[in-house]
Amino acid sequence: MLSGEDPAFSAAVPEIAVDIRNPNRVAIVWRHISMADANQDTQRSLICHLSLSIDGGRSFTHQQLDWSSPETPVCNSPYVDIGPKGELMIGATLAGVLPQGAPEGSHPYGKVGMRISLDWGRNWKPTQGLIASDHGERFVLDPAIPVEATKVPWDGGRGVIDSRTGAITVSGGFPAPPGEKSHSQRFFTVSSDGGTSWGPIRAWGGAGWPQRWDGTMVSAHGKLAVSYLADAVPVAAARCLCIVFATSDDGGETFTRHLVAEADGFDRLVHYPPIAAHPLRDGTYALANVTKESGTPIVRLSADGGAHWRLATMPAAPPGVVRASRPAIAYAEDGTLVLLWRGYRADRSYHVFMAAAREDGRFGAAVQVSTQASLEPEIYLKDYSVRGDFISAVGAGGGTAHGAWTDWRSGKVGQISYVRMPLDRLLPQ
Image (tube, rainbow, N blue to C red; front, side):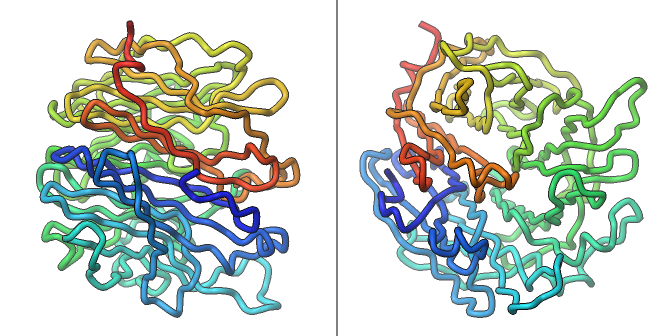
C-alpha cells in the first residue's frame, strides 16, 4: 500500500506522472482524511502527499505536502506533472474551513495552488494561488458561463505541462453535485514562461457547447486538449449528455470543439472522460469512457485532432465483471497506450485491471493487477463522491506501466494501492 495501512486514515484521488525522458522517475500524489473527521462529515483533516521514485517504481520516498498557506489548510484533489526539462509540478485544491453555523450551501475561501521543484522534490518554489475565490477580475466574461460559478472556481484542481513547449495549464472547477440545476463549470489559466506570469481565467465550455459535468485535459505539441460532458451540442439529432473533445493552439483563447459520442452511464465520475496525447504524433489522441452494461471501458482514437474517432479493439470483460468504472489512460514514450479500470461484480465488489495496445489500437487481454477484492462501505455510497473516491491513475514509460487506485479491501477505509507491470504482459500476445 503506497499510503500505508493505518485504519485511522482513508486515502483517495491518486495521480501519476512519469518522466518520458527519464522513465525511472515516477511521481504519485494522493490525499488522506482522518476517519474521525470523515464520520463527522467534515473536511478539516484533508492532507496531500507526494511519493517519488528514481528507480522506476521499485521504491518510493514520501513527503507530506506543505503549501505554506495557513489560510487554506484543507488540501484535496492533488495533481502532478513533469515538464520537458524535468521540472516537477505539484498542485491541489486548497481551501479554508467554514465556521460552525455557516449557512447551508456556503463555500469557504479556496484556490488552486501550484508549486514547482527543479531538483526532484528536495526544494520547492513558493506556492502560487492561481484560480481563487477572489480572482473575479481575471475572468474572461462569457455570457454562456453563470457568474455564480466564477465565485467558487477552485474545486478539483488539475495541472499539466506541455511536453514540448513547457507551457503550464492549471484548472479548477465550480462543484455542482449531479442532479442540481447549477451545472459544473471548469476554468483554466495558462503560463508560457514556466509559471512566472499567467493569462486570464477562461472556461472550457462555450456558447452552443455548455458544460454539464466535469472533464479533464492534456497538453502536448503546443496544443491544449480538453474533454467534458456537455448538456447540448450544435449537432443535429444529438441526444445529450454528450462527450465533447476540444483543442486549442493559442493558449486557450479559442477552441475547436467536436462531438465524440453520446454519454451512456457516466457514473458521476470526476476528471472524466480521461484523455491522452500521443507523445510522437501531433493531433493523435485517445479517450476512454464507460457504459452502463460493459465490463470494460470503451477507448476511442483520433489521428486528426478529434475531428474523427475510431473504436479501439477492447479486451473481453473479465469473468464475473458486469460494470467498468474509473478508467485511466496514458501513452508511453513509444506510443504504447495503457488502460486501467475498476471492474465491478454483481455483489458490488471490484478488482482493478490493466491492458495495453500498440499503434493499431488492439488491446491485450485484461490483466488483474489488484491482489484482493475491494468493497466500498455502503454508508459512503449515499454520497456520489464516495468520500472522494473518484478516480484511478495510470502512467507508462521505460517498458513499464504504473497504476494507482483506491483499495477498499478492508471494507472500512480506503488506501492507495500501487502496481508496476511490464508493458509486454499487457500487450496482445
